[in-house]
Amino acid sequence: QSVLTQPPSVSAAPGQRITICCSGSSSNVGSNYVSWYRQVPGTAPKLLIYENDRRPSGIPDRFSGSKSGTSATLGITGLQTGDEADYYCGTWDSTLSAFVFGTGTKVTVL
Amino acid sequence: EVQLVQSGGGPVKPGGSLRLSCSASGFTFYNYGMNWVRQAPGKGLEWVSFISSSSTYKYYADSVRGRFTISRDNAKHSIFLQMNSLRAEDTAVYYCARGDDNSFPDTFDYWGQGTLVTVSS
Image (cartoon, rainbow over all chains, first blue to last red; front, side):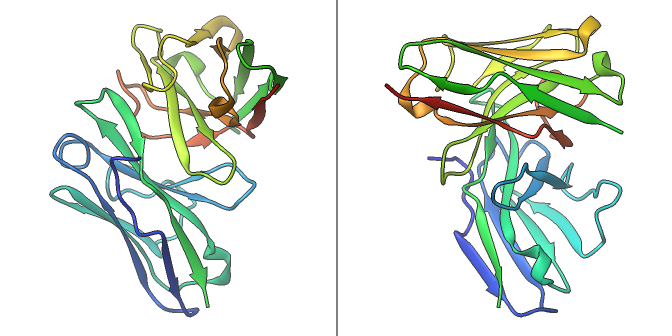
């Protein structure tokens, strides 16, 4: 029962743009940095976005992050078959004194 | 190249104990907080514990507080997770992950390969 809610699944055709929303509250998303992770099943997660909208070196600019109020969004443009994976948001919750991950979103490329 | 190499997983009976290790290389270890994150079979990611660079700050998920203990040895570039009173619901792949130089977990930029812990009678 995560405190961060994501859509269970998102799908689109190759080349399209998708967005994944991460909905939280004032004690987590609303007051702390959000990061995003991609995980191909059976492998370790990989950092995509940190501090709401910053990309680590090596992450293409097809991936973007934003935050407004108590929601954060991951955007992926030019969708590729290799983008099929599970995506998680995460942030510190100041009330729980715990890091919380989102419920996860499975991206399918049609 | 940053590397996190894990060891110590395996099968254990309910109520038993296990110690996980994560050995780091390729960066100035004592400058970074470190974390443990787990993933139960078919489930999402669950953060487990954080230890700051100098061990001043330690945090735990409610689900493991009082049973798990995180520690680090900066001289050996390693972190550890001592897991006691294990339960079936602790069955998961456990990952160590590098944080940043904060007093709480913020971003996990490098991850270990994961190690499976199976709690079953």
